[in-house]
Length: 395
Picture 1 (cartoon, rainbow, N blue to C red):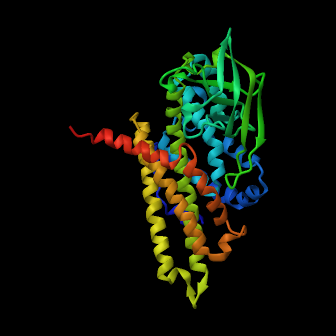
Picture 2: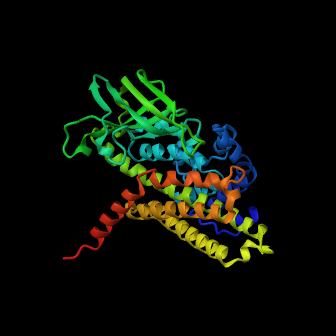
Picture 3: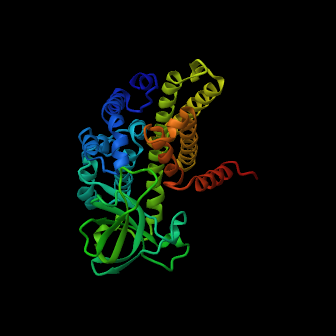
């Protein structure tokens, strides 16, 4: 497997520093992640050792500024690292994503006090973060959230509950979207972002949600019952800007998810091209049958296209450009490619691919999550279309 990975080009925006990090992560994935991922995933265990490895390698710190203990590297390098991690196990990319999202929001909009209090722990990975939007009655329509935060002296009193929170069982910090003005028009002006700490009175986490795939990170409910969150934890100190904060942070999440998808698709291809040369039918390896060759050719071509789209969006983010169109395209295309390639990998493997003896069944179960996470692909298509109509508006 290492030989296959080594011929894939490294695309990183930080010169040899970025390239070295990607190579080191690639070796770690080959040596430590791939041999253990299936057993950990089937057992439903949190990957404690692998998480500690990621902390020790500084993988949480890639995009954090040096003043907060980060490496200050590009999102292009971050994308390449997430791809490599998820070539081994997609769930690991989700664990890292929480710190990336919340860290970006704090670096971009946090007060000086908030940055000093929260960013060093997030950059080091010693503190895990969760990003909380979804509620039982508010998924794709994020403006429909009902969790309410009412100012009371120096605190906000928060009531409501959240759903599908990645890292919810382990996080120390939760960036949570709340309604501070339920009567606002338009609705998004009533949304604010609160940094909720785990030990907040009245705050608790619920059950672990049993999922089809994506089993490394825990996914939970959150409950707020007259939870008292200090007003000093209002992101940026301004009410009514939570929707802007959410949309901006989700751009980083979509870079992460697109990169995850490329990694899973690459893993499916790697497994398929090896198996196709080992498995024989009718006296020859199945790789010599045109039906299989067509699958391999399509997989490799689409994976490369998905990778380039994703890196392009990351480069534009590094340049400070608006990227909602670019990252929407990358997230849409890469996750659809992951869905297609994992199914094709199952077909290349035949019956054995449908068993838990082969990693391809895990790839097949992990891929659908990425088509609905960080904004469903149906929403991505709408965002893309609206931006295109803005760009190509006729007189």
